[in-house]
Length: 258
Image (cartoon, rainbow, N blue to C red; front, side, top):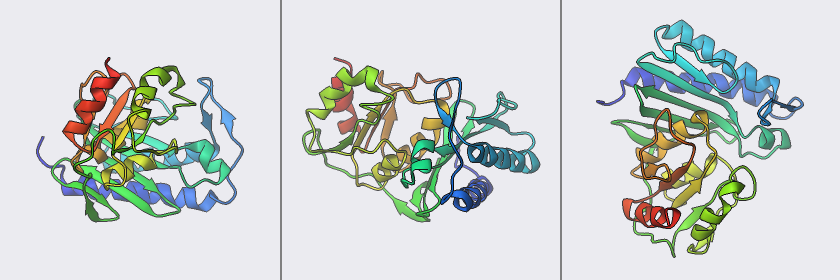
């Protein structure tokens, strides 16, 4: 695809502003967490954010599709589909840890062409899109070059929690690293995009978890695939390997596939 149209980048920022206003208004007094049937947490504010974003998309781009975490898909086969994670890290939000955020992606067919991740209290926003690179708060960022597995700063997100079933594979990376980032947060992908982290491996990601993060890292110069080495799309298996460089990615993939 050619570069994402500028009006869609502006619209993505507009949607993020709507989400940020709702989240900030409740950040000091979040509601109680409910547990959904799949075991994941949700609050009334998660649902309020997604409802507001859906309403704005339907008003401005009624021909676009919507895939969100909290409500059923809408026009899932439309050429353009917006993917919404209203609050990624609901437990952290309720606990007061600034490791939560709003995630938004846009697909064209099976291609992930735009990703936005916003921490609304810290006001850190990453936006990556085809033909535009990746920015943090409007400033261009790039992944770091030149690191190898033994010098890389890595994250094995969910090692003790949601990805614990894959601990044996992830442990192979943890024994070949310089330093490990322990936070299980979307925020680490932003740090990868701006050259402060070098490698992330995890599993059990849903589409609304990985879509935005994939676009952010790739458009900053990184390499992102599943653990089989295939590019991520709307129907990927939930494994993710994101690296600052192709060489670092290849080295990590070799360990994961042994």
